[in-house]
Image (cartoon, rainbow over all chains, first blue to last red; front, side, top):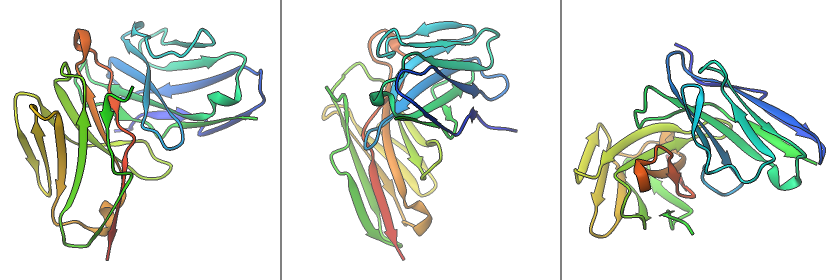
Length: 113
Length: 114
């Protein structure tokens, strides 16, 4: 079956703009995660959804970042007033009902000019 | 404060030899450890994992060893193949409150030379 998909694959925006990044998890996976990977670093946790609710949003860096998963499937990561420091690859992962193995999508590379 | 550390940014080995990738962690609450492999422009791919109740897990050419007293784990690949060339990330979960999130190291770039 299909894996985790993320759109767009690349996004270039200007400082101060608003962006939305989309994640389609593996069908039937109830847990969904967002991570951010900066150059030369490992992925860093942002937020975790179990179903429709955010079970852990402790990794969101500030209130410019917000994520939703209204129907318990597709998730959207929203970034307001983007800054150059937000430039990174944003990775989405899903897992089946809290199992530890997380399956990652290919990521969205965000560049803020 | 890096809770998961991979101190070797890169490793180069000859095809057919053993590759050993190391990882150290500081949070004694971690109870599950994973290795992910990442090719350029792709997301990380799960490779192998180990629970804290075990000290070894083997899957084909890949073996992970866990030394809880030293807070150290290693991934052994034998024999190494050119297709194994990738960045390998060590990750841990289960911190305070049994957190589901994965905490990653910075990665080690493995190059297997033909």
